Length: 303
Image: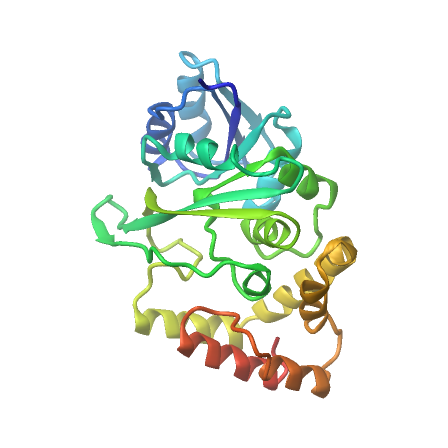
């Protein structure tokens, strides 16, 4: 029985090339009690026309036109403007969903305490721009509040959250946010519950415009990290995100989580905190090589 309504949230921007394939996969979901909210971030191609063509035959597709905000702000706007409902699922414009994705999300979230912010996310497999299979996603993931401070293991297009999580986000939209899914992950890891589904439920289309590290080979990953951490201000953005998170939610965290978060929220370099982070007794990352790199960044004050 489909008594729970799910709002699927899509931010589009010049997405004409792949949008139809994604929309078809949403409309083919086995779980039918869904509304699809699309906020267009001021596209210049035929994206709007494609959406309007679908809307002629599908009453559950709703279009929001807006000025260009970037995808992070655009998703926050979707959360604010979508009708209040039971669950919310982030969706990218260029992937393909397995037909049972929403059903599995609803089944999992319905077992959790609705009074807390809850997150469901699944595994995904990797495909190239033409939807040729590239690689399987890693079925084993580490997810906890400590991990959420340094990376986002839950990709946005695999996520589904409950109304409580949505309310936490909408009531505390950050000014300093690296990614909307990362902010969501921290909230649910810190104050709520997380359910991870090892089954790949998204065909994640990888192309030159992809912005995450997921699915890269070892050499690509190391080059991506060098550019990200040493040649950009990415680590400064992460620190600002953590500082703002502490302002909003620091008092709600359990004592251990509160203490570990506070290690990251000093404005200036603190040698004593750097030492505590460097030799922190619990792991932040799954892979040992990643953990070593992270501890070096702690020691030299990059994070």
